[in-house]
Length: 181
Image (tube, rainbow, N blue to C red; front, side, top):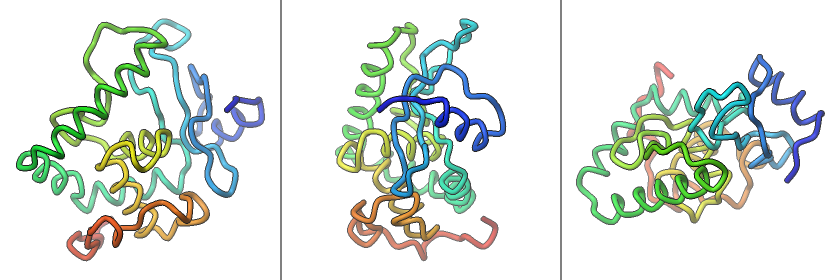
């Protein structure tokens, strides 16, 4: 993928500011919009920016926020604390993220994003990372994207039709309280 001036203009509108350190459009929505940017580990002014994948599409950022308000992160963290396979999957995703970022520039840190590998801190990061890397890459990312797609009715517009559904993943959205989201 490449970053054009038109892409950067759209991302600027999405963010409400000029994007910094963009090296790639890591994910485009089925309707063609840039939705995840890949950024440099250090911004042009030298400020560390360890968030490799940054979610920009307003439909997805809004849905990630709704999922956070509905306590999806707490649900994920409770599962993470008890499931060794999930811990290994999350650690592998964390290590992959670090390798990808450090291939551009090693910040000398073990911070990857979204609370990895021990906590679930930010669904925006998990969704961005999963969309950039694909649904098979890590479970929490695939789940967060499926929940955003199905709860937000974003399948076919912001999320591909063939992305796993919450039903495919065995997730019951009714267990979450979206009344305040």
